[in-house]
Amino acid sequence: MYRSMMLINGKRVGGASGRFDVIHNPANQEPVAEVAIGEVIDAVKALEAAQCAFPGWASVSPKRRCDLLHDAAEIVRERADRIAELLTVEMGKAIRDSRREVLSAADSLDYFAEEGLRNIGDWISTAETRSIVTKQPVGVISLITPWNYPVELLAWKAGPAIAAGCTAVAKPSSLAPVAATEFVMAINDAGLPPGVLNIVHGSGETVGAELVTNPISRKISFTGETSTGRWIMEAAARHLKRVSLELGGHAPMIVFDDADIDAAASACVRRAFGNMGQVCISVNRVYVADEIAEDFTEKVVRRTLGLRIGDPLDPEVDLGPMVSEAQRRKTREHIEDAVQKGANILCGGRAPEGDLFAKGYYFLPTVLADVDHRMRIMREETFGPVAPIMQFSDDEEAVRLANDTEYGLAAYIYTNSLRRAIRTAERLEAGSVGVNVGSIIDHHAPFGGWKQSGIGRELSHRGLDEYMEIKHIRLGL
Image (cartoon, rainbow, N blue to C red; front, side, top):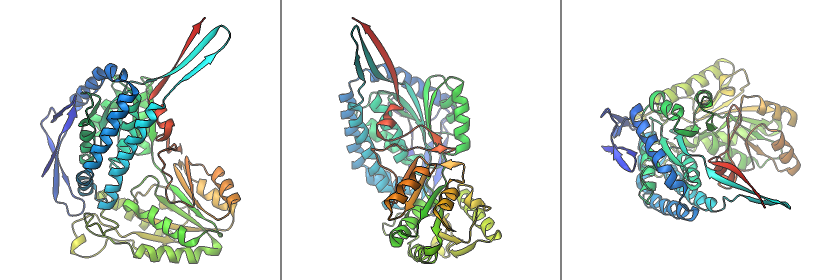
């Protein structure tokens, strides 16, 4: 069984308590890893190590930081198969998707390596003065990441933090800490000075809370549930810490009557069921024009029934299990609530049968029809493999329904009208809008939420700026 240690000040260590937790494979409940569990004292040691390392790392040239990040990206690629396998067995993601995630994380390191070189300020001239505007690293950063994309989302935070000259302490989710830890080990093996990037394990109530409230950390970067994000924002305010919060989502997909129905149906299935719907930008609500609803729905159902479910280590499998029984139970409860209020199950709606699925947290991808906004599944983030389809009669109704949520992370539009696409995208209350594409992620473009979906941005040069302070130096001549 694999043993996952923490990394504090460049050393692989266990927790002060000496305790280890066992991670079980959600596909079959077999133990796959022992994880060293930290306590508050371990979080403090990691923060102190990052604090000691900060002055030296902040003074390292951007070129040197760039070279180290490129080296780290190559090490991650060399270890991609192993990290991907650990990711799959700890949280159930299909192996080909896990490998894609790890390679994308390496790409993130490369991107921010170069972006750090372009992180320049301004020189402003007047007759008798010169104003220099510089960017300097914030300081020690606490990076708190979720279980659904434990490697890639950590790369979105660690990459810009390191490139900016910050030092950091990462805390992965207790549900899936192993692959994230191996990712951090790979980055450190590129030659980072001790203490620049640390990782500690433990519960959010103890280790996570210490990383948020300890005055050593000057910024919190968190991806997770909205309720936890609110608490972090309140706690960080006591020391006026900076925060980046990427929180819950409830993404709508609008399919207009002039859309390419085949393309829209394929994108709907891919975005609603990928990673078993356990994605913050999953399609959670589908709104389809009356004129094409029957055709579109039939194509979605047919494609859904063609998805291959099974052992996530099998490279031919599309979908593995959900991460936990709690997530599966929540999905089932949302479906039951919808059916009680008039929805119809067109496919799925239950766990698959057979010995292969008996011990895992498997659930069939589900398509619902006849849904409305009285149902929990149209109001709350399910984080499960369900695509509820609702019809609309005109553009105004589509936008109104899509915006009828407290969330605003992502939205999707399918139409062949440029005028309709632009006007609809501008009216949707979301941080990212995909038009005729199934993904809104681009390293060069900012990612983040409106409303209850968060504050701050990741990716792009704006993501790097989140880890920088701006200083104005005015010179009299």
